[in-house]
Amino acid sequence: MRHMTDVSKQESIAAAGAVYYLFGATGDLARRKLFPALFSLYKEGKLAEDFAVVGLARRPRTNEEFRQDVYESIVEFCRYKADDQQLWEKFAEHFVYMPLDINNVDGFRELGKLTLELDAKFGIPGNRLFYLALAPNLFGPVSFNLRDGGLLETKGWSRLVIEKPFGYDLESAKKLNDQLSQVFNEEQIYRIDHYLGKEMVQNIQVLRFSNAFFEPLWNNKHIANVQITLAETVGVEERGGYYDKSGALRDMVQNHLLQMLSMIAMEPPSRLHPEDIRDEKVKALRSLRPFASDEDVARNVVRGQYGAGALKGKELPAYRQEDSVALESKTETYVGARVFVDNFRWAGVPFYIRTGKRLPVKTTEVVIEFKNVPDNVLFANRHDLSPNLLVIRVNPMEGIYIKINAKKPGSDNAIQPVVMEFCQSCLIGINTPEAYERLIYDAARGESTYFTRWDEVAQAWAFVDRMAQAWKEETSELHGYAAGSWGPARMDELLGEDGFFWWPVNGQDEDNVIWISGSPK
Image (cartoon, rainbow, N blue to C red):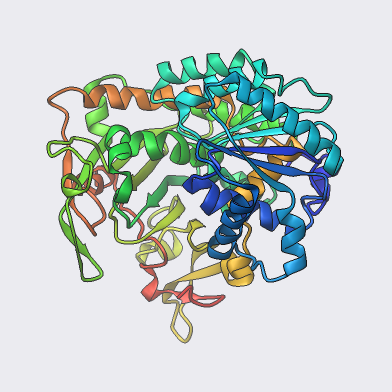
């Protein structure tokens, strides 16, 4: 759902020519995501010839070595093959490398000279996109040196793209935002949450607002509960040192889960314009019922940490046995919560959210469970009817399925659940555009819909900070769960208190249903 400018009507049109500055160009994010995304955009004609990419990092590299790094990245991670030698050579000539000490403003002045050379060589109209794949504590110093080094003195536009985490809590996020605001306007800052670039997350708004049989039912009169799952099978891997200071609350809940929740809960925007859409998301976040006390957190939030276990026959270590993790660590690897959106549309409807590491399957799904038909009416008084479900599958399979009740073929009014499925991954396969492709393309076009605005970030931090504060108390409980399980038993109990249960993900509960459009298996 994009605002209808002339650019967005033509999805294949090339983005405006610009110099792309990749800070952290020798890092993992650039290698796995950014270089492949740029190549895909170029191959699809969404990057014209008037662009250049400047790789920036501390370590020395020649242009040839940098281009070889880019090539190896594309071979390993890109959805397109770099098998057209002529195309690759044309693409690669736009890439240059410059070693840079980000604390030395003189280096930025040299970068400015290089920029003018690239503008002249490729006919770039003075546009600048600064992508900071760096630690958040470096955002401010880099921004100040971009300004003081003259990089922002241009006849074109300047935009800053930054990665999460945006701060560690609300206080640190405010300090970081204050630093950036001294150099850039809010309209120039593009805060990436890569989940907002995923096809099916963006499809949530299209489903809601372009289908007449969904929107009238999208309220507390018809919806019983909403379940949002973001499950990972991996542990902390080599990120133990970082993760032990962050945890699932800050790493996943504050951004990915609350962003998906806001898109489910938001009101229809008045216009298909980025600021109107983001206004409604902020309103949804403001409507989240705050936790009133530590006891309120304990009643509604489950904090867990995985212990030793097994998955697919493989023995897995406990979190505290992982590299760089403290032996007495209380860092959570699982967060589940019951939250409420206290507005006219959603009052009384529980939203159950959960995310965790070392869970049985890798998946991101949203399940909307509708209220059942009244008891003792027609078929309900003779059959145990299954609730109707709308399931939005975000990752790794992308698609939608709807579960309804229908007559079992060949029976006398026996009822069986029926699933109607749209499998987007089955149609597009591996050529589904990556989230980073969409987001880089959007940033280059000035399309800010699927980037997070400062007030969104602030509201999300304000909400999760209350949980983090409660967990500092010695009496706060850290629930254990076995690696390879679905998390702490307390989370199932929490749903049971309301008469609900977690719907199994990835169609695991669908052995007794009829598939209209084929099984996802």
